[in-house]
Length: 376
Image (cartoon, rainbow, N blue to C red; front, side, top):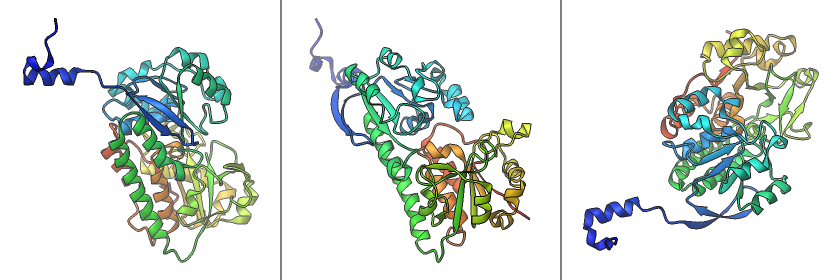
């Protein structure tokens, strides 16, 4: 017969308490689209729509970022192969996470998700996986007893980054980590807003998506990182003509409008740069010199070389994968520094990114994530 706990002695009793499983509790959370969902914690099994949400999990649980992840639609390597290599080296169990889809919502197997027996499914409201409009999928998972939660770093990141981090922090019992990061995020954002509030003018800006990967010229406007232009003290010239987050504009539009500042979201990789491929490259493996050279190669085309922004050294790129990431705050800082260098003389977005890695992530920062086409 087991001994009563009080008969075991103080040390043995304490060890028994530590070894006991965590008591289950049900918490109510409200996701990004306003759905109130009951979650039983601890959450030991969950799925995510895209591997690109693994850095969020690493932020919240740096010692065990993929613990409890029993499935995802795509791997982290689709968008961040360099970071995936670090993930596999330090957390080899990440290699074995099952996939339940490919790169689109219509590739997702609901049956596979249900077979994985997660307690929770975490989806983005507008990423490449199932979105808030997929009512049938949500209903099927609900019938199977799987709670569905929506987060967002892509469609309206200025409004939804902090609450998304806080939501998943609460679900995973990592409230302290979430609070620390959101405090950092808010402080950096407020610093930018306070500085640009004193701007005497607002430069015109065109933000081009995937320069060199897509034909000219897809602009970001009403959604994604487009609104960061206004927050950083600029005027996005695509706002008046774009019917959605991204729209293709002609090279003639760009030449006629002749923005004060040209921005690009660089999605090329170091391997593509070394092969001489056209996408402007940033990220792992790229040195500052290589990043500038990659940008110069692209902007030497006639439709760009004549732009005032290019001729005056106000053509810049940042890493495309910040657009669906809780670390998008570095883009706001970069834009403010490029648009208002006199007010943001101490702006160092690469340094801010380094701080995020040092303080919040179990990985090493590798590569260059911002570049300017200097005409020295």
